[in-house]
Image (cartoon, rainbow, N blue to C red; front, top):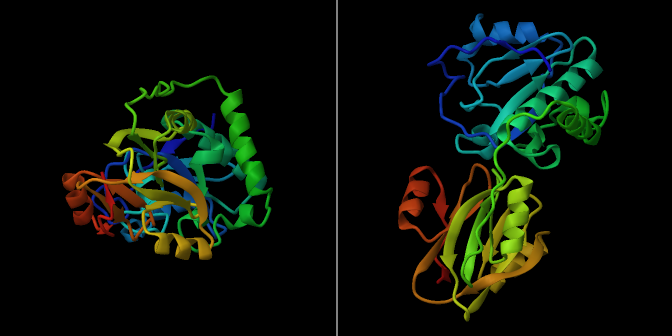
Length: 303
């Protein structure tokens, strides 16, 4: 296992906001400079760099690995805003561009595997490029095939997860089968999905998605609600005009998810920082999300 030296950014500084975090993934960066991991650590903790609003959990090169923040606190690294899933739900690893870059990235893959075994998940579903959260060519070395491709990096993470002795893991979630019409609510850490299929809900839970309970019980008859997928997030709509517009710009039609009918509203919320959509039957959750910066996009879906 990679030896980790803890050298935390001082508490109370802008780079250490201190928001609690229950991480669901790991985001990989390249530093974009020739500085070593030690120099990055010193800059962030001792030489005034901690006054910056950029921060990360780990910095690693071919020799050293420093931990700058607890993984239970968020860092400002993803560029997706104060509420973004990158900033608020993923652990940041900066891989240095000095020395033996192959060894540095191998060590980063091993560190990533170690972290995934703590938080749960897999290389294919819970490891992200910085570029996924914002328009930036990062991690630029891996994205250009140096010292190898992104897919090779993920394969190495998987190999390290298999090779290391098993670490304590979260118990597999067994989702109880609910009554007919129940809508299972699942969360990947960056995307909410709603399904009436117990089989699909259990499959997603086995992949590492979080089961958030039954959202509501949909009626047997009513107007169709379609499930659309952008390639990153899902959106549910009962509006055929909106469906047609989204399909015209490249969204994928995943079919009818459930139906809308009755008098009680389902609030559709939108996070402008992460691009996530949320459906909730809870006015309390609607109010909390609004206070946190989400927008309510309407109450067209009923139950």
